[in-house]
Image (cartoon, rainbow, N blue to C red; front, side, top):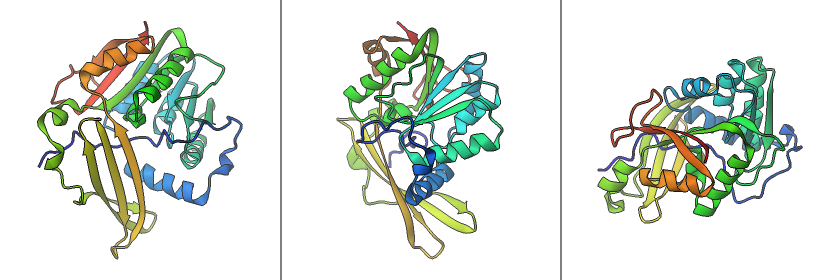
Length: 280
């Protein structure tokens, strides 16, 4: 059976809602949003080396912006390295977790904004804008991608850089066909501990090759086999030959494209594609 490349997960960074006002307090997170955020953060922990990559590339920046900040994992690493950081996300529960984490780590210079990565307007420009952990793949059509990238261009300083990473998709896109996947099959992903509760997480996936769309449903079961929670992640992935024209359409160009976080060349054996872009 064909395997999708790496661990296909994403920030909960896009919804069909419009952008929320920046003044909306973190306390607006509901119990369900907080529960959803806590379980999401337990499962989705990033890729090895990603935090170090962003810290290196943001060193010396006067102000960094993270899109899809989630529970604050990357923002916390940047703040701990002395980089003032603003994080945006449209999930109030994740922003509440991010705030708690940043406060606990003693970060002094951070701001969190509840808004959408397709339509944010922050009234500031940044030395670095980062979109970690396949966040751009959460944008499910070309118009949404261009809206986000255009916002990034408008918020970048003249010598600023846009940094992002996504999983490598060319290998499974070329070698596999959707009928190789049983959409009803549930695959065990990992066992987790949520306080004193042991959870087993399973994934079910669907794939539309023509539209480059993936949908992953994650189901959390307790030790008695009861379904406690489920979440759906939707992706529209990019192929390598789509990176440059997609960025160019928004007035950006690729400065460096790597097949990992240590500067490796891109290849079909890579699990991650890391990109550094600048104003064209």
